[in-house]
Length: 274
Image 1 (cartoon, helix red, strand yellow):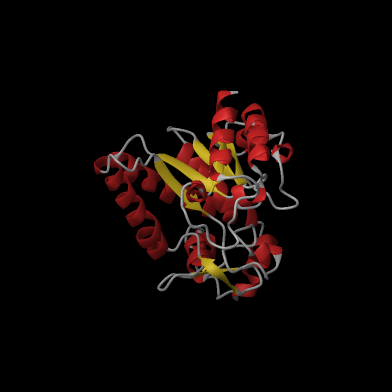
Image 2 (cartoon, helix red, strand yellow):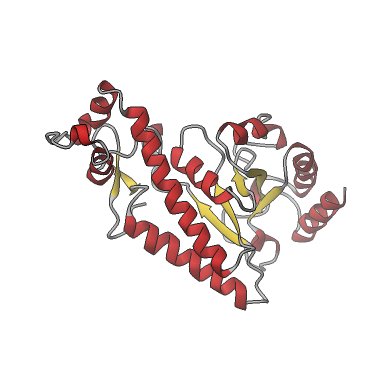
């Protein structure tokens, strides 16, 4: 969602989205950099709550009713004034270009053979910001890991750029996937993609893939089985959400899928020992 003072993303049709432009300075500074630095600082002094890394949630909430290409970043974003003018300024031959309407910028770039260059330029700018973020965090705590959520994608160029930068010359970036989360079309370890190594190689990402499971979608015995299969098919797993196994009161709609808290804890222990 677009925070106050953030510039919204602009789609190829000229409309504004519900989330921020991927190159908005205020968003990067206030909602990413400042928060990440604070987490890194806490990780060095809070020895009780172990903080190993930073989890970047790239799911765009409140977009459920929108068209697929407006739910997140894609090649149809971003064509805001700042993004477009920043690119044009790198092209001296277009320095006197008359104003181009937002809904015509993608087609203008395409017609002039510049669309591929535009997306590459945008990608590079995101990578620079992500590397700067990582360097600031590692200056405080060099051992901090970075994770990106949700599932890996071929269309979200911002997510790929982030992962590439965060995993470069560092610990691998962790893909917290939702391919196995538990929804009808995303149930079970069999949904783990078979081409994960090829994906990371194609996009030059130093990454690892971990399969995610929601406790409310799996029974304790199913959790055990799928954790074992995940360890065989990918680099690990993650579970959502752990308070369900320890809190005495579970909110409505978040009840465990089948079994007691003790059953789940034992299932996880058994799977890890397999």
